Image (cartoon, rainbow, N blue to C red; front, side, top):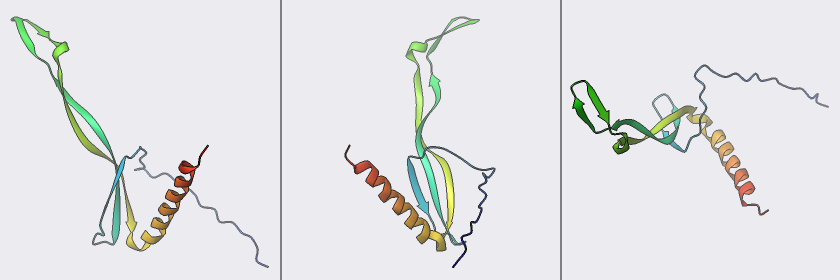
Length: 112
């Protein structure tokens, strides 16, 4: 009869750990070093500056017309994280992601 044993795995957070909500993903590779790279990103808006009309009242005074400000809004993708996966491990990781997807689908399709 085989003896039941346990294996302890220590979880550590690396110094470059990131946490964020991703709204999209892109996959690149395989690269020359044998990796696929999963890029997780979110689509965000950035207001870089307000164009505010102004007029000079006197040499030492300025009035800013805040009611007429026009913002310069730029849409861009902000990269959250990049995960590099050895090509040889892709089947295992793909299977895990597919199983998670199927499990979540069963949770969301159940009627109350």
